[in-house]
Length: 408
Image 1 (cartoon, rainbow, N blue to C red):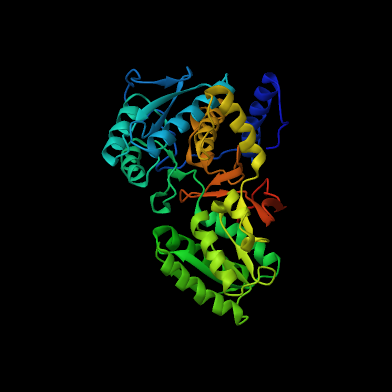
Image 2 (cartoon, one colour):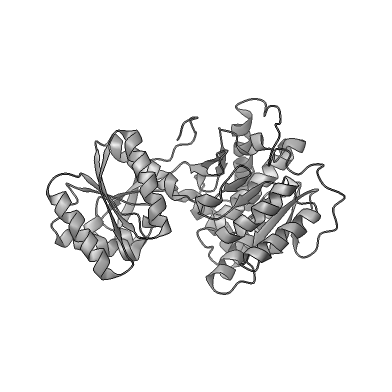
């Protein structure tokens, strides 16, 4: 959402209230939520357990609806730092929605599967009707087993889609959303023959599957997929092979979704191999939303998908004002999950976290734009397409604000 550069405190509260109302209005647009079926996540935890115990540990907010926030707060290194950012973002959402009828039960997973299982069990015994988090795939698997038995839905932050399922929703930015968006856009610009340079990792495997599907749906062909190990010799060898293929005229677009360190090196190898970015279209992922990518002259003209930036810029400004530090980019996940929980609790009564409520096909509006949960637990997002232009990246196709039933 676009906001003014320096809103007043009252203006900020109104803007955030409008954000929450927008999410609810998209839900109400399709009419009644409908009859609740049986199965995981339908009742949102209402009436399924005994009398909850009193919350222990840190609690954010004072509403009557209890929601758990599971994070690796005492994990070492970046994990603990990110967890602190996510907790702060949830706190900021509670402050912004001062009439929210929720309280957040903050639980430490310690960054382990067993820690996550224990945290989820404790939160459910204390009356949590929804679980936000955890962060790591191993922890999501452990929590889902506990939550399923208690009929409590989970909104997790992992990008491992093997952990997604009915009732376990991944709010994170998923590779498939990136690939679908950029391939659809490339197809509208006449790109039909694709090659890809992918890391020989689990991420690369997920991207390759998404690429094959997206290109097939667009009526194109995947001519080559080169997988490189995480060393420069392997990257150079594979990039040179793709350069030779591109020089033969059999491809008109090359997907390189890796982060800046790898992608800039690959682009330099392709440039040395004679690949002209005015003839061969370079395509990236959300990981390209990095100044190092924009500064790489061999990538000039490249396209990549990412959220529109205004929402995060406004969020980051509020976060810095509240906590005197810049947020991690992923902090918006906790903010949006908390805001969503607050909005649904205020509007949908006992159906607030029902399967049909959470998977409404019209979706929701968050800091990073439109998103919706699918019944298989994955998430679709409305992403913009950016084009690199001599050290900058400009939107060439804005993010969609609504969803169709088949896609964005």
